[in-house]
Length: 199
Image (cartoon, rainbow, N blue to C red; front, side, top):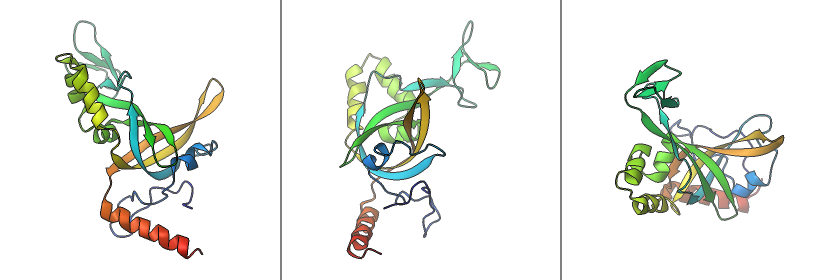
């Protein structure tokens, strides 16, 4: 069984953060409600995005300088509290919740801008334009549908949030990558070898 919480280990060949360390199933996370209680735990998961709710607020208006949330300014433009300035334009950045599924279970996860872009396949600005420019709700929903049931490798963090005096798991996508089938085959062969020759 993969060790709990070490996650984010460097690849032995490249020094890059590996998507193949600490691989677990979703039920390993969801059936352990105390995970992430004292400090964040990190895992890798091979899963599909099974649902992206089209009615959710999937993005926020962000400052083009610092990426923090902006509000509509008096008169025109957008006010950034962090930068203490008005700007005529802003960016849209994803803050998306989706359901992911593997062969053993499912869970709701949060994904922020860079990771959500990789899942959806376009920027929040592009998706907003598709949704609002011509009222193309069908095109918008189709784009989200196309993002589902595509296999990905996810690096996730698990933390505990308190809501109404009740602790709940929060699973956040920290990295997402397409399946490299050659690497995946090597990983599975190593796992089979471990099963045949347990230490």
